[in-house]
Image (cartoon, rainbow, N blue to C red; front, side, top):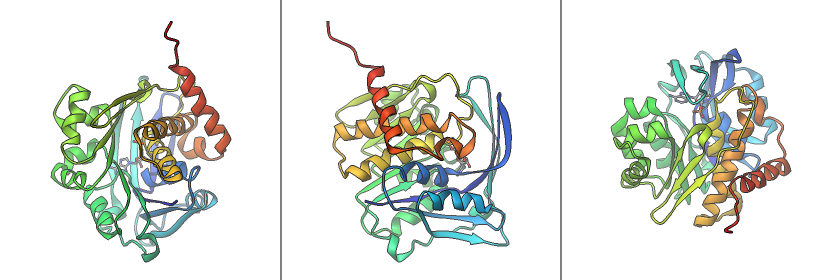
Length: 304
Ligand code: AMP
């Protein structure tokens, strides 16, 4: 089973208390598709880069067997750029700049051979573009969407239109509060579910994630880590692992949604161990399953 991913391909400049990088390969589509590729093949990417996007960024995805036929390269254009600074509390991040560049005029065209893809992941990107992608798809079975404060603040009405067309929304706790205008996360999820998605996942940084449907609340633990170098991409890797597992198993039952949340959390935990995409470069399916099992042990206890 395949997955189609739309999102940003970026050059990221990141500062953390442990170091800094300039113009590193990143972007929501890059992280999501690499993470999902550990579960399914092919992963298909729709996006745009400028002539300045380094060859190594494409090689990284090609090595993961990601199909780049939906990637537009605008030779005379500049790639999307984002810069962020993390504090000692790595849950806190300031965006220093967001330069949309080639994304400003991007009009996604889904190649014919991509249109029947059954699982779609709308990575963090302008909600108008997310919708344009969906409008060209031929009745996908599962649509998972990620977003962030930049779009909740800047394109709220457009985002609300997109939410009507999706099955699962993934966002972090502060974004859930911002979108729902409700401080309590359980109530916030209810408000958001009322906007369209039947399933809402709220990530709480190093405190795990909540999965909420009409009938259940599932609380996933976070993987206890001593060495978090760079949280960039953790949310995207979560989304990639989540949809990758659901696509691989073709099962969206509540029990399997819980497993998908743990696979998402596992991919995110690998991501933050190193800078940029390095943490998700050389994983193995077996290594991912080992971490999945460690998650199970984390919150298992006997009744008596
Ligand atoms: P995450 O840490 O999972 O929230 O995602 C970080 C990635 O999102 C970085 O690689 C950025 O290039 C990308 N990103 C940040 N802001 C935006 C935005 N407004 N639109 C699209 N992608 C973005």
